[in-house]
Length: 465
Image (tube, rainbow, N blue to C red; front, side):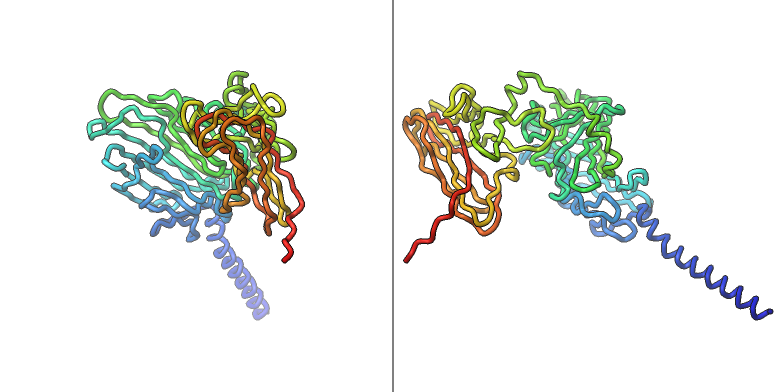
């Protein structure tokens, strides 16, 4: 009896020990998912020893950012300095510190300046885990300063970027929506590249915390939420995209201060959200409404993948899905969507200047939505062109058959020509390719393009010896 009792107690003790051991093994995993121990070492941000991002102190940029614990990299690159195009960046580090003494929140602090020390930025970044979102949350508080008395050449500054976020291509945000901070008041904005009147900038008004939500290709939706206000501006910030995977946060207004040290704050958060949480957002979102004047001024000629591009219809400012259209490149102000003349119909694409030589063209945007050339098939690109007193290289069409390929061009028209048919033959390739069609104008004078068409044709026969 004693032996049986001892054996029973031993079995219970062993079982309890095994359960305790399993619990001890499971606890770190659960805690790891909850994001309860962030560490910083050599530029690596880790949660319970697993890397979730890198931060390069020399160029003030995150890379390989994971927003969902255990999930894939969602952000390839994300800069946190202030910049004005290529003119200057507050990228030269003065001070940097990383504080991981609180295991539930990592804090980074950066002070940096631009060339000549005319501009200074101070940025605080905290990394934590939000259990309700099941996401890591990066919260950024940043401040921009201009020192007028330190040889600052221009106090009246145009809008400045304070963040650039480049998503992984697989996580490309092809549609997005803006919330004005009140339940049910979602505004659906068309992803039309440059189609909106404010060049696709979305301004976040004073007094509202605004979230930009993307419809990504996975069940997790990346979110950028701007929460801070700019005391001297009517709008705190805006979002613009170029292309869709590259999101830029930018100050939306110029600030003028007559003296002293100018300070501009901005704050935002980056995290991800489960698509199930947003299932009612798209149906209930209100579409951005454009006036007839805005449509006339800012719409772009739509690209027709099948059939003839006669430029009679626009891409549509009201469209909420990503579609291709024709956009102008080159010398500014030298292209026009002409609604007065055409080879077929009453519209065409116009280029040039009657008084001076210019270099401009029309092409398909975004490039990734251009026509697809199938392997083993040859194609014929045709277009009609008209020229008026054109001097120089002339008017012509070209096609680039895939990234890195050399353009194939048609004949070039100069002088005065009524509508002439220009053709480019594209030989068959071994792999599928995305084509870029371009309508070129180089020289002094005017040119018009209409009825652009790309169609498969019989491959060239090999010549017999």
